[in-house]
Image 1 (cartoon, one colour):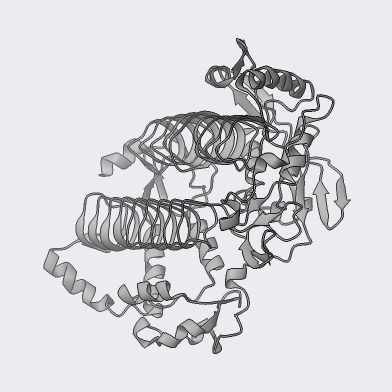
Image 2 (cartoon, one colour; image 1 turned 120 degrees about the vertical axis):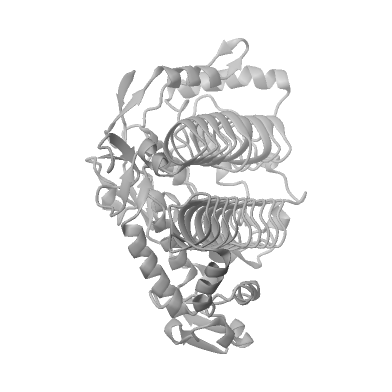
Length: 588
């Protein structure tokens, strides 16, 4: 094992023999020569932070479409350099990314050449692939009738959420998989008709559950497995359970607030396992489900032989991956990619293979340093080549990139069209200001309309965008046709008291005073399930649901039962009693 020092944060990180074997295995071969991928210069956290800095999930803006000049909603602010098209025009045959090709210049930096294309090729206003009636859901794939779900995959009739995959009829759900009719759930898997709270698997017809598995008809319970008809963690008969529920049929907003408070008190004295795993073998870190041989990864489902990955599904033999919703194998350093043999890419979907340093490509194979292509192969800098010529040119490019220290690392942060404070990196690596990017003695450099921080001697800096007026257009000031604006605290307490006319109102969030509206599908959901109208802006609801998840950080602590040293995402300040796996399983 070798200890390396991160070129960005200065922290030590390890490279072991398994890592070296992986880098050797995925190193591309051209003309019978293997072009080795060296060990990374950054630690896993800094690598992930760099990848996330080019992803904007949650900030949407009003701007003009550059293809027809009509107004649209976009994840790109109007200040970006490249054209932004509406989805219909971007996916049409009206234009081709091949028209933006440039000739290879071996005397120039290849990142600079790629960036020249990246700044001219049109991009879609939001990323939406094979979706219908889901135009307001950014990064959506094969979904129907979804609204403001960010990274929505093969889902239907879902509203307001983040990481909602293979779901139907879910609202305000986060990290929810293969579930239906769920509301305000976080880390919910294979569940049906479950409302409120978190960490549940294969549960149904239940409300207010935490850390429960295979439970049905349970209410107000924590840490139960294989239970039915439980109330406040106490077993009842079916008849007794139904009688207990009679006091909770009105579902007023005030009543739910009281239940949440009492559930928090129950949780504060609960016993939890040091990690959230289901059916895993030889794994490390947290929120893993049906996984084997997983190292330092979070939110992985049905994965094997992966390291330093997060929010992934059915990966095999991959390192440093974020946001992958379908089968992908033998790939390294990328985000939002589908299929196999992908190196240093992002947003390349629909069965792509053998791509290197590409972005926003679909159904593409054997491409290098390309942007915005569809159904292409053997392309370099968006120019198409014969197979033989491609295989001759790529090794030469790699040799040049190696000399310039461009080969083997992901794109530098300065290619991002988003300021750091716009990107999803802000969610997982929050900073309060550009100065907060320390510790490193980097000078603060200023550019026109932006501020830059020189992060490292190896890589270009993150950008902090001060010029953008951050506003979620979908929740911003009410549209002119609203009949009135009502403070949330003045809303009727139950859904039965809400008139149909609320669809023409704007509601002021009781925490931020930002206005938001209720959409018809949302109101129908609340009425069907007897749920009161929310008092918080959807942005605040999202922040709160994300806060309910344990942080992506491991703490050293001792099992509160046997005293054995364990690692856990529960910090020492948490009130729960944290048990090692062996002690926890003995309880059940």
